[in-house]
Length: 232
Image (cartoon, rainbow, N blue to C red; front, side, top):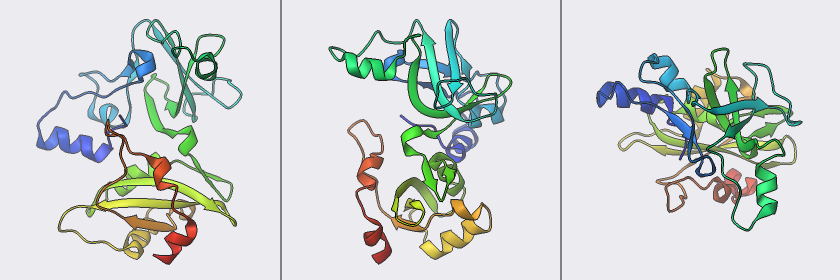
């Protein structure tokens, strides 16, 4: 239900010996695969992208006005073709919000397409954090924190802030037998990424709120207030 973290994919290939494992991307509304890597793609392609457009389908990356952005720039991923649904059952309003007049399905996912047509998902448009005028993509930070030896899983969200508009919160699940404090993770991050991307708050948990299908419910994480986080 989500992009496989790069570090997890590398372990699957290295420790489970699944050298030909591939990544595919799609939605229930698109039947479902729109993009997929290939068994002959090199390791870097298979761990950093969701591949290229499948036969008889189209994909593009657009800005907020619906214009196709240049290769290498971030925008919303749209897909079109035989696999896209006709619409939501008895819900024309939801259908019109998702599928435009030219039959493009707007996925709500932020993506980058390179010159060879490989697509990298960088996050959800509704999950993007704007802190002090800077756009921050939770997926990028989650991939970054996965490289810390103590971190087993991490989810990054934004919470309202009167000064910067939003502040960054990292919900962290540690590996059994490992320890790490908020200050330790903050110092580790400060030495490696831009200062405005370093989370202000860390919350350590044993599990994340999940749907019955195993997807993380970030909206439930946002219910905690800045005051509650600051008091921890």
